[in-house]
Structure formats: C-alpha cells, structure tokens
Image: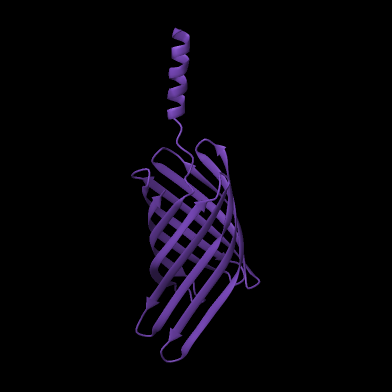
Length: 202
C-alpha cells in the first residue's frame, strides 16, 4: 500500500513538472516597427500594427492568418507597406510541451510609395509560402517560437524568418515580443520588423 501511494505521488509530481503543450486557438494584436534597406544604404523606417490568429480544426490541423500594415510620412512623400498571409498548418507533439509544425500559405505584398515632386509607384503581388517551425512552452508561463518560410511571390524567391517569446500572465492573456526578417535574395535587400504583442488564447 505504501509503495502504491509513493508511486502515485511520484507520478503526480513528475506530471506537474511538464508545461502544457502550446495552444493553437489564439488571436493577437501588435505594435510593429519595420526597416527596409535601400540601395543608397539609408533605411526606410516605418511603424504600424499587425493582427493575427490561428484556430485548431482538430488535434493536428489548424488555420492561420496574419496582416501587417506599416507606413511613414514625411515632407517629401509617403511610403506604405501591407502584407497578408493566410493558410493551413499541421502540428505534432515532439514532447509534452513542444510542437513541431508546418504551414502552407497564400502570400500578398503591397508597397506604395509617393514623392510629392515626382508622383507615386506601387508594387502589388501575390504568391505562396511553405514553412516549418517549433513552438515550445519552456515553462508554464514562458513560450518560445521559431519559424522559417520559403516564399515565392511574383516568381521571386525570399526566406522569412520569424521568432517570438511570450510571457503568459494567465491561461488566456499573454504579452510577447517578436522579430521578423524577409531575406529578399533577388534584390539583395532585407525587410526586418520588431513587434510588441498582446495575445488572447481561448
């Protein structure tokens, strides 16, 4: 009897030591700052917002969407950059607290720039993305996520790297920081974004 009670106690202790697996049912809003490299080695800096979310369809399949919008205004003109991706993903537990996941997404980028003395130019193209990532609950309160996507937009290739860290205030409310980098091989330029995020999980 004593051995049975000790075994039950040990099982309970070891189970509580593991954090829960990541929750894929979430919505979040972010304040973001984006820098775009230019050929004259002078970055364009913009700020704006992002909204995103995901919803699990079953234990392994989820849908996701993300929209970023940033801009900058000056005495000479304006620059606006919007990006949208939406698609479907597959997640699988590799430990009790860590998920491996893969996604396939529709991608859209729109860049509009105007100079008062010259006029405006725009870039509006779409394509697809395929990505792999890992989300892990390091503890019950702290989560890390990393992901890389291959993008094909208007027959031009790019890699998008995305990393984030979240502190879970409650089971529903979290605060996080993130970094996203578009590595544009065709024009040898980068677009990088930092984010401060509020997340609600359900």
